[in-house]
Image 1: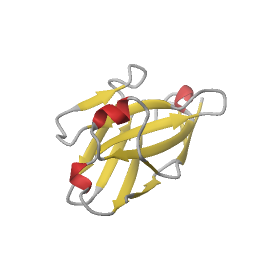
Image 2: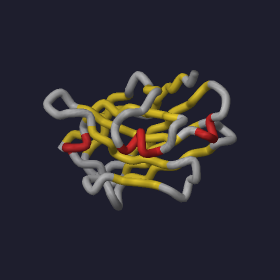
Image 3: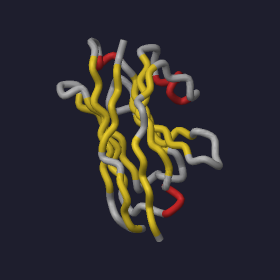
Image 4: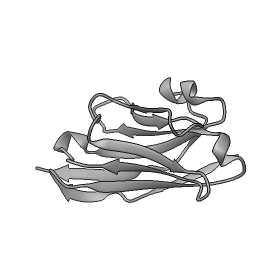
Length: 124
């Protein structure tokens, strides 16, 4: 069992930066693939970024590539999403997700564990 708690959301202006963090509890964090998703009321939940057990394996959605960076710190049992050059269309609730079955489950939006979400609002 893994519990995930996101933090770092808020209201920012277009062009600003923000870093989201997700703290995990439970054992074997290092064996979990991790991901960040987002959802706004008028769209389905979408994968923003994913990172495998090997931190060298990462995925970033085309919409955020070059602006967002996912990372993980196994010693601190955290994953972070550095978000730069934020745009109004980045406004959403951002969720952290984890799965022990490998990062394909993250990529397929089938993660087993989810955080409660943190709101990011980008004003123009």
